[in-house]
Figure 1 (tube, rainbow, N blue to C red):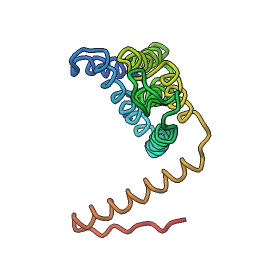
Figure 2: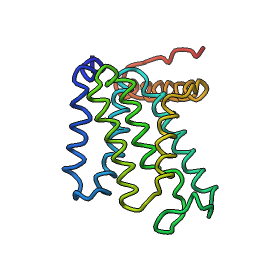
Figure 3: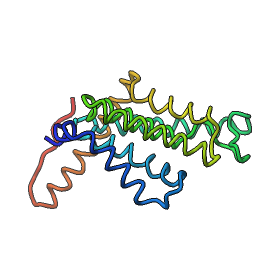
Length: 194
């Protein structure tokens, strides 16, 4: 039911998130971008969870984080990894990866049938990338790589990662559910694994 509600009113979700991001920041481009790069993946997670694919979403997000972290560290002082202000670990832009990942998730779930809301999500992710360039935190190539990484991890066929995330999610839910049952004084039995 939540999923259907989000799909019907989907245009409002990104607009509300953008308005909140703007209202809760000190209105610099960098700070608004910081907030939007959190809001988009959270909105994507809400839509994925309401549609029954929350474990898949989280597993892919964790994989994305591992990829950009490893890439930033392994490139060291390579020119592509140097930020415009001179610091390292710039490739790819993690902010843009997260925003692109969230926007792609929204577009493929709750906003699937709403082109206006899809455009808002895409523009919001683009704003995050632009904010990183404007703040001189990343080059355009670092931002583009981040956008591609976030998008690719949403659309790629990653069956092994998805199954592993689902097993972990189910195992956690069973152990937490059994613990809740013990707290309530009921005896919930964990179903046997396949």
